[in-house]
Length: 422
Ligand code: HEM
Image (cartoon, rainbow, N blue to C red; front, side, top):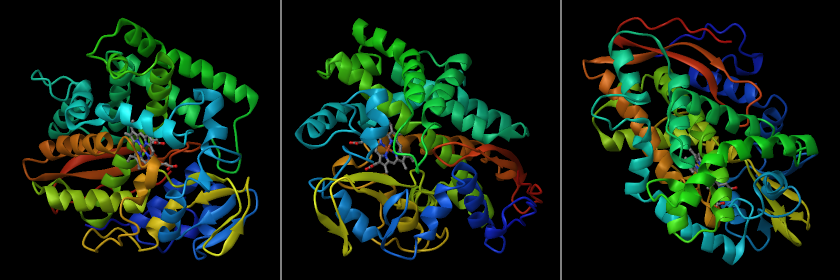
């Protein structure tokens, strides 16, 4: 079921591409009109210096070499994530740490991402309730009843409910909305061509984060093991470490999900994969989800600061240089969405990073994606499939995403929605 692109306002650069590739390009450019084309222009060279951006790596094997060598390429230092996040989150929040302290904090946080803990968090929006309350049961019900829903908003509400679970808030509509808005206010300040935040951005980000994590602090102090902050205390984390980790989870783990799931469903729609994605076949779904991650790359780049003289793929680098792993280039070199094509081992899971900073939240991410797909599959149990209608890309966000993506159920083989870009 390939749909025609009638999006008049898609840029000339994407005209002529397959619909899923054209929409992806549009979503990426809406988020980063300057940095994305600059990164993509480096895609045919394994390593190249790009003025104002850094030493850009577009080859998966070289990217792994950098990520697995924290002695030379660090997350702490000029141009690294520490420049962005330390002023806001403090010095010890995993993504701005290295060495033994980093490994110890990761070990301490590990149990929060056990299968049981993750199931509990994902069910925090009420998905497991027997009375059917909650974001995902509501999504299933509305679709099954024939409503057109904004799928991007539903995924955002679900991601917000998980944040509420993490910070120890009940997932009321208001709490969910304001948690998501708070996370986005902070991440939306980040631009790849700037190495840090301005002083006023740091002040604003700190104030927003302080409000967002206030209930987490109270939950930590109360030591309630039913909450994530309470569990952090049980696991031996100090209040400072626990609040830093909550902040890091909120900033890394919400927009990625909000970005990925609607883009996956849109790609499945554009390539005729929806029925297979939602079929009762775990292996097929896993392949389609992994392929969706490979082509969307929700975290399009990873930053490292060079600690001392070294070389990357033959290009000499010096202390203080910034290395930009263009994960989006590394992962997309193999071509467009095709779950039937074997994945190059160098690329596999690179979308979650590699080495000591490999995504700690991967089990939670996978569980969240599965929960949303289960909700769609439940609506499709009568043989209809969700069909994408009008969609709009989000502008000025850190993680490229759809601002809205309309879905409704149609009989397989029935006419889809006309496609309209914004
Ligand atoms: C599709 C969703 C996600 C993707 C594609 C993704 C991707 C990544 C990547 C690429 C990194 C490594 C960055 C680097 O090395 O510079 C990372 C780290 C991290 N992610 Fe995720 N992530 C996702 C969801 C989540 C979720 C749901 C959480 C939940 C809390 C999370 C928490 C983290 C944390 C805490 C780190 C830092 C780990 C460290 O520095 O030791 N992520 N993620």
